Length: 319
Ligand code: UDP
Image (cartoon, rainbow, N blue to C red; front, side, top):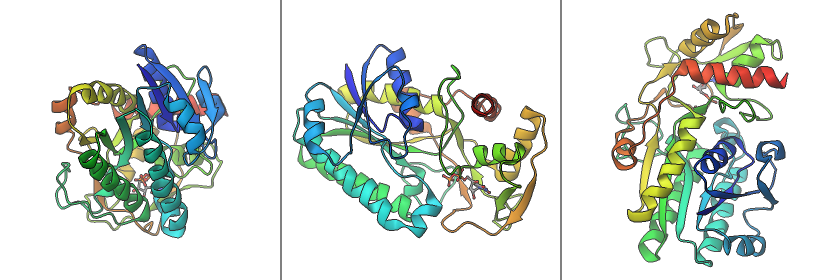
């Protein structure tokens, strides 16, 4: 099978491209390199283009059997300050891509959605049946596109899987690809920057949440586990109906627990200081991944310690 990996020069997209190739699939990466890096697409056919460039996409779509869509902006804080950027790319750009797909013969579509579509969950661990009430524009932009996918699947013959990621972290075991964001706002790379003195200290955003130690709880999932789920998602689409699936481990860790795990794994102290809450952050987001387990026979295999050690190895190789 041939797959167009849109946003394949980014973090999760590049890991999925590698997982697909390991399974023997043919991969074409499509990326505008606005936040992606050509080095993450090394060894693959890379076509530089925008998701709204329907002419460029039409030619590529003739060569593939399925599309995976990773191209998105994904910073909660930035989305609160600059929602226009988020709705422009994550909704309008994505719709344009989806319409290009509908104008081709491709009918299999895998979408990078997010647990941010749920907002503040009514029940933790969260099943896919939690109400979708996002509390930040990032989550709203992703949810709006989920609605489009649902409508298209009903009206046309589209089949999709919307994967709702929890917190992607870690790096491929081969040491060649990993997380590269500029600026680096995600927790684990931010902690590494604090350890290395690239920032004065880790700011812990809020210690007055209704959680056991007062800091936010998240479900950190290894990016290689996410990548493997995408490969299985393609098999699922061969025979089954469209579906939205949580991708998480089912186990939550607070910001303070992540800090202490990193101190243990890396053997260095994390300079940290308390800071105000970050707008748009729900207190606790933990997946109930049982639907993914049941429908795709998938389960996250890697621990928080493995996430940290692979991410640290990658960070060390780059400094
Ligand atoms: N966080 C923090 N300091 C940082 C970055 C993140 O305390 O410098 C917290 C953040 O408030 C959230 C958790 O770490 O509770 C994970 O944040 P991240 O940005 O990694 O992912 P998100 O949950 O926003 O997708």
